[in-house]
Image (cartoon, rainbow, N blue to C red; front, side, top):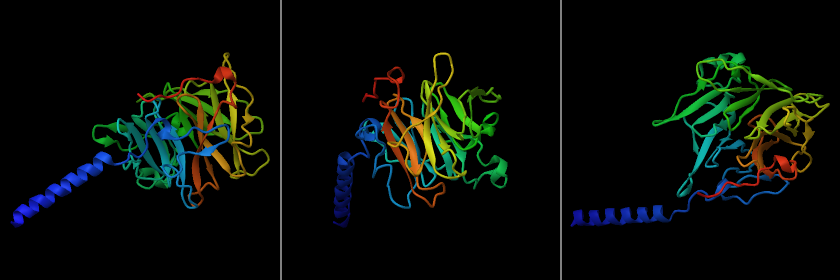
Length: 311
């Protein structure tokens, strides 16, 4: 009798758990995690899902893969990823093979690599070597999960602050404020880095966010006349057909505020820009990922009308 009751209890438990799984609400459904697209005024991206918007929370550096079906970001400066499946978006999970706090994580176009810069070098051999603090690393997707981090080496060892990856896998980065370089990732070689001729002027440009087709770029700069380490704004520059770049212009008050704006990333369809707004640089401050429609900020010839659609 006890055995029969035990089997009945097990069966009821199994059926109940199966029903819960079958009818459980997915984390999110639809393009861009099912979020209502913003207009020309920047809005917090996925509040309550990705961004907690609390005073002691830090979410930053949101980035979608080329097909729009993977999204990575930092939460309290650890790397998280969510992916779009036939059942909807998965609950964001921390990439455990990245054992330290990081800066500026970015997906490769195919979402099979995550690039990042160590922010806190706990767990790395170079933790006592300040010269290696910002060097670019990569984790790769394998059948067993994400690989351990590996430093990319030259010329990416010059990178400081932030970077971004274009659709052709070229990485745009800054070796110093106001100087932008681009190079392709080629294993076991030192690929040449090409300088991007953006007018420096009185700007201290850093952290380039490149459009997928490399037709325009957004970067942050400390405001002219401000002390180093103070509030920053986002600036836009366009690449012409002859390879020249327009004079950078401030993206204005609908995006820039009295706080810190940085870490621009352009959506795969070039329709939106994602960036981070924070109340300060360190993790004791709060930060959220914002997004904004780019229609009002780009000439028509630089826009792409198609949007990511459900398959």
